[in-house]
Length: 271
Image (cartoon, rainbow, N blue to C red; front, side):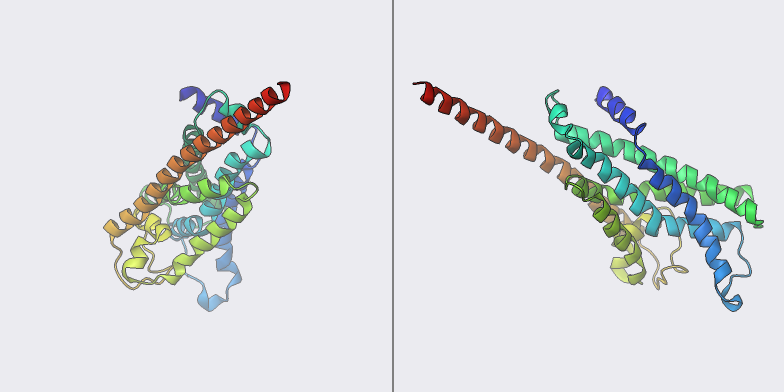
């Protein structure tokens, strides 16, 4: 398994699609702060400081930038094995499909955490550049921790989408678009069970983020339901990995049967 992880890491060094995540997360704090500048004066937040910027970035990342980036990058990493016609070579090593997909998911998860750390740095630089006040060790640690943890929980929520659209040839763009709509749909759940169990809002609840000022939630979040919401997505991803194993076995049997039929046909002609 270590050799497989090492091989997947070497592949990542040649992937220019990783720039999608870097550019997207660099835009997030700029978009969040810029939205304050374009609205009319009476709607602006006069107390906009570092704490508010960090909160805005946590919300924007989880609602839009993390889902789009992670699903696009993860699905593309899986899809390119078929697009570049390298999957048949990998399967002869032999490497099981679940192990290969699991290795790719592992590195996407590591990359998600690194993107979270990167987002913290970009947010800090943005706030300092525009001259925001209120930067303290407590604010930086709290906001930075929420950004990194939100990256991890959002990744857990996006795992099934990565596996589904990664195994559909050329569908990684469609998967990222769907991830955007699913993340944006947090705005439609204002209270009750759905507000806590919906996977993308659950990803925020688990990191202690208050959504009342962003999604307009009217009830207190339920952390237990949030754990269930994220847990369902993780379980779904595990089931998809098991199904990938069954698909490979079925494919191998079909190939073996076709080869056997071909050999028998050749023998009959020889007779």
